[in-house]
Amino acid sequence: MRILLTGALGQIGSELTCALSDRYGNENIIATDIKNGNHDFECDFTTLDVQNKKNIRDIVSENNIDTIYHLAAILSAAAEETPMAAWDVNMNGLRNILEVAREFGCSVFVPSSIGVFGSSTPKNNTPQETIQRPSSIYGVTKVSGELLCDYYYSKYGVDTRGIRYPGIISNKTLPGGGTTDYAVEIYYEALKKGHYTCFLSKDTALDMMYMPDAIDAAIKLMETPAEDLVHRNAFNASAMSVTPFDMAKSIKEYIPEFEIEYEIDETKQNIADSWPNKIDDSNAEKEWGWQAKYDLDSMTKDMLEKLSNKLGSDYK
Image 1 (cartoon, rainbow, N blue to C red):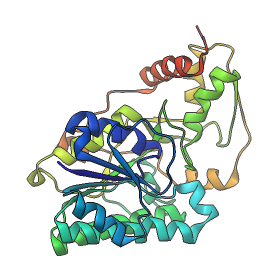
Image 2 (image 1 turned 90 degrees about the horizontal axis):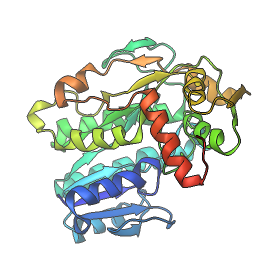
Image 3 (image 1 turned 30 degrees about the vertical axis):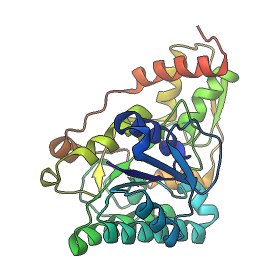
Image 4 (image 1 turned 60 degrees about the horizontal axis):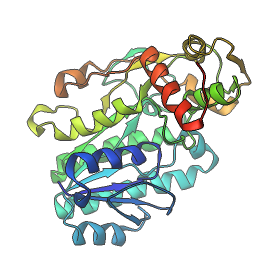
């Protein structure tokens, strides 16, 4: 594979880039982002605005790219602050990627989100195929993106694939404006301060996934033979359904003095309340063998170990 990543400095991109480099070789990976920030990539890196189709085309052409992981997006909470910018980046950027993929015969991975669901969606064991009426601009762009990818597959034969990611929890890169950001922040604050103020209510149940599982899922889906796939651009995938209270309880097993309180952010709470409590990801299991390796307890143990080393904090 010759792989282009967009949004490589984001939460998922920063770790997926390294994983792909390890798997396919640094010489076969081109990482890009709109900003030129700090990174530890050993592969080539260049700046790219996904709203500039010519630049995308030039990179794909000059580097013989055959696979694109398109991660560049404005996330849920941040998108509510700048909805038109979110539409431009999330939709026009995707359109440009798909057009270039059509021209050069590239396969494309586009992450979707549980944000595609809304308050009218079944909350528990949310089916793969169900009503999608999101109330956030982020959700609107993700539903539209799923449909656009379906169109490019059926109309032009572009090999598009995607996962509806839940909240992603990472010990390496901080999140960038998502409704589930609390699930990363809580571990940092537990180690640094022994206290966390959560912006969601204690009983807000949401699907979550630890970053190593999220990376494995993307790669596994893209390596699955095309003939095995039915749903392609909208696979439900999760690892655990947890509340802030559950997460705090798990942390207290290792840091007994940890305390949590709640100051609700209305915008984020409204978005979270419109999402499912738990999704059904059986189609991903059947079609490409999806199975998470981490549950809440194993994730908490690993998060605290990794972050304590990173922060120089001894919680034991």
